[in-house]
Length: 90
Image (cartoon, rainbow, N blue to C red; front, side):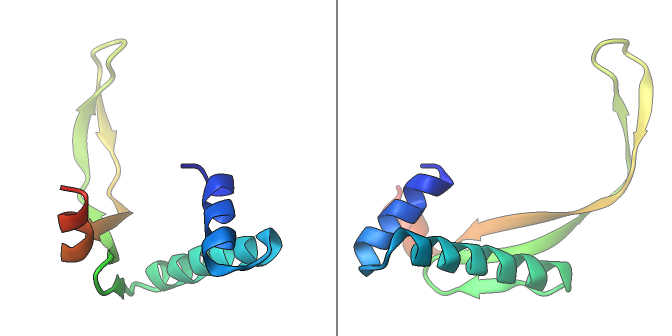
């Protein structure tokens, strides 16, 4: 499912116009992004938790040349499914 299909499904299920559903989805994504950028996690009981994880610097290898390269440390977003979601997709 892509973003357009998700907007269509939200509009249908919630009885909203596609524009309103798109605005709601964009607001959700924007607020989750702001929270993660601020160092906070977003927990939706039954669905899952969005959080930030730190990756340490490490040594990697260029697959074309085989040369060793240094990969910088960085923060990455991660999602952990909640129990209800995990049980549903089993």
